[in-house]
Length: 278
Image (tube, rainbow, N blue to C red; front, side, top):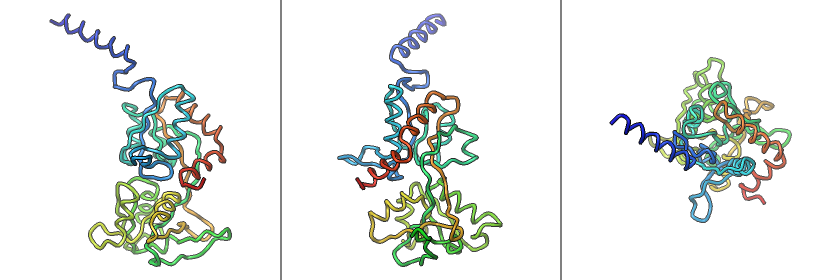
């Protein structure tokens, strides 16, 4: 019986190999990309039926697939599990979801070269919060100090979540001891939907990255957004990159090659495309 089981096991392994399927169920000819499709214009649901994952990051990874001669499969998950998923490497090869480089994340995954610099923005209902000023290049901003005592909505484990909690928890934070509160949501749109709804989920405003904030506001005339600054010269800045399972040097090199080929102008063109500006 033991010999029979060993023979059957060997046969199954040979069959799996013939089909190009690895022991953990990943096709070696496919790049598995973990994403969160609620972060337009970097990833969002679109297409004729509204079921296709589209966006800047999706275009970038499809170019990587072409360079390596591989298929690319995108899987939508909650943002807060992407880093851990990619770290394990069991189901996903990389994560592309407007992910900000942080030291904590670098301990778990490898990052590509940064390809986009963003700042945090505040989304509010029209006329509910007055701007604190305007920069010399015409950017209307609100200071962190102005969020004291507010209930702040964020997408879980995003940079907005990290910044807001740091400002509340740190003794040096501008919101420390102010009574400000952070409420986490699965995506930015759900957080915005909770602004002023008057129940236990209600928030006063939402902190999220610039382009998703502008995308949401442009599609809803009831809201407006402002850049979030520490003072009139210091924005809350971050850099996006694509995360890769450590040790997958071929994929990382291909991603960096595509980002280099695109350059700033190419990335900006993709952003404009998915914002509907061209």
